[in-house]
Length: 484
Image (cartoon, rainbow, N blue to C red; front, top):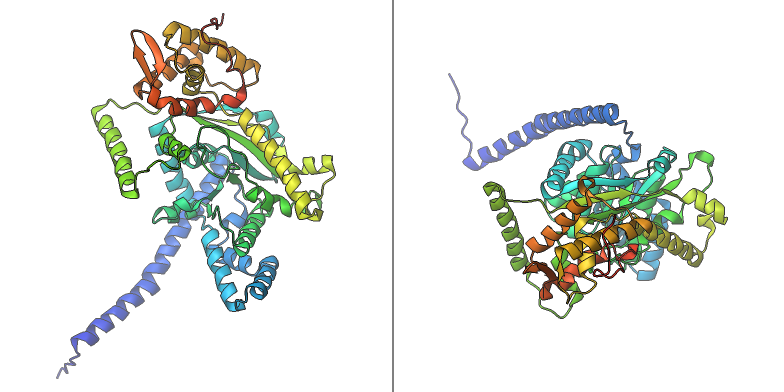
């Protein structure tokens, strides 16, 4: 005889829920973890064999372990105790803040996401938007860098595409850990960026406790040999010119840097990187910041503009009539060894007072910005824009513009600038620059004469300013003669 047990529906739902939870936790989750760990190990093996990249153990350490190390760091704990006394907060509340800051800052690097997802997306996006080129690379100086050094790429900041472009071009040699602003802390972008090894930075935080936690993470990563990429300007250029450097992250790295070689201490090597684009996606939105009193589109309207931009380009792709946004070029300059610099000047950074260290950091930051500026590539649009910007009220023929372009190229080369000449054809480079400016209606053509559109003078200057610091742009276009 079979007995039947009846249970209420609500009890059955609860039991079924517990059974599903048990299956998920005990079977599916461990299986998924095993699968992804196997894929990650396979990726690490492949990149190690194909690219000869050795990832630092710090990068591969589990995120929770890094958070715990940062939380229990003796300097962070000392700062917490001091802050609790000064602010009258309980130590438990301060510790909770530190834990929140640590979880906000520390990335969760995933090699599979970096090389199989992030790299593929970066390559596809960069190549879809631009003709991507590497121009100048100081190969001889790079070859002399001690492979055990901590490398930091210092980059000028023209566009949010900078992250994509540099990560894509550097992926064949190393992984990069970027310092990313709060703009990227939105779902699901935040999760992807963190999995790519980037760490988030509150650019304008005045909280000394937060700065202590951030500085200790940056120092731990630097001491462990994590390759980093920073933008010393601290934000996108507004008018196209290089901005004065901000010292925050550089100061964090240098504060505890010990130039001595005992105990396997690493050298800290800065590599200047110069970026330029024939078209910057954010050019007009950045130029709006020059007029703080001008009305700006709201967030919803801004999203509408962005959606319209992408839909317009998508329709051009489908019709086969879309052109990429010109050239994007990256130059890698001569490495700057902090160990050699400190020895030459007789410096020991940990022994310096705050005022002395800030002075030295300021000197280094200025030298790095000069080095970055010297390797910013001259691209076709910047070249033509710099000529037309000299006298915006004057219309010039194509022959006059071409003659001025040849003369400007000669002067820039004499000044040591790095000029990217597509197809090694100066006439073609000039044609690319002029065509892009006329297609965007920044430059108008009337009866065979070219002149800047009056309402687009700021945009024209934006592209001319990208190379204004290089010199070689002072010749009168009418008086210039063609290069022989």
